[in-house]
Amino acid sequence: MSSSDFRQIAVRTESGRAERLFRAAVSAFCSLTRPSRREIGQLEDLTLPLFDDVSLESRRYVAAALSECEYAPAALVRRLCEEPVDVAAPLLIRSRAVSDIDLIALIGRHGLPHARAIARRKDLNPTIADLIRALERPTLVRVRDPEAQASTAPTAPIVAAVTTDVAQDSAAAQQASGIAAENARRRLRSMMRTGDEALAAQVDAFPGSDTYVKLRETALTGNAAFFQTALADALDIDFSTARSLTANQNYAPLLAALRSLDFSEDRAFLITVAVYPGLFPHPQAIRTYLDRYRLLHRDVALERVRGWKAETLHKAVREAAPANGDSRTASNSDDAVTPSGLRASSRK
Image (cartoon, rainbow, N blue to C red; front, top):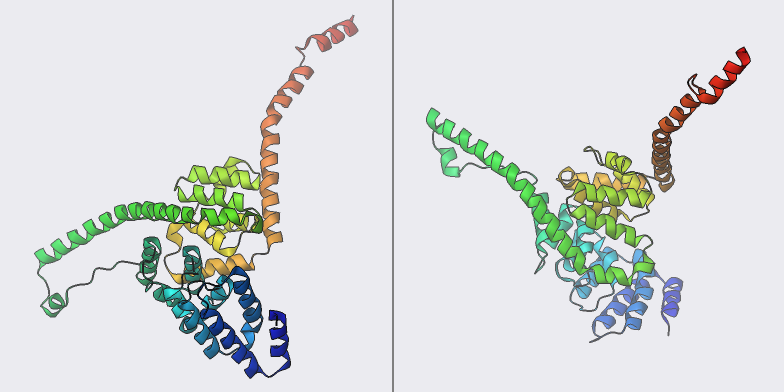
């Protein structure tokens, strides 16, 4: 019996049958020692159409079962990971089917609840662990020792010493933030390269992947000029216009540029956070970005890019104009040989 036959049975019968079929199919799959690609595809074909018709309890059961499965179907696992954390937690903590890129995207979409579950994974990528710690504690605040709080108010010399200590810590924190940002970019580059082979295998499935890789890699260098050059090439605009898109702390122009290239929201977010690492200190900022990206219609973004291209063309014409103007001025001047000769002959 094929997977389509199973779906027809589920549709024709009561919802309880769909739940039992959903659970039984996953249980049978998990009992396979080494499932083939065909069997993995059959399970996805069977379960994904039933997904919206089964209860949270069934989804929770399936998530727990697949979390221990070494060859879990990636599409079904990703769908379950988008569920509330009480359903997705086993997969977020244990599943090998969830890649580092998937984890970053899940944190961006769901914030702290998913991030806290992901933090419990064994051998978690250090970059992702740093991201979760930053979300947990967006600002580092020095907390006084409880014994010190119980003591009497400090004297003036102690207050002065503490003030100096805080000032030194602030300066050190600013210096460390630049080092930490560069270290984060380095680890992100290393993490992304581990997935380059998988990305190369799916080039046909992701239009514009070459452009994405170029923008991603140049953004992660931390060198603004490299990224601006790549952005100018991708949008077919001049370098000065591309530079103006990232010249201030407002990512709206960059958001429109990435939307015009039809990048998925997780790819666009990764590039943006690499260019503006300081603009996303907490989950709400990430959610705001993703909401803005989803709501920006691609036609609107393409219209903005056409405006930038027109500006590039206008600059080129304007820069060429003085040479032509000088030529016309010279040809109309009284000092020109031919006109002067003509006027001289006409006076005779």
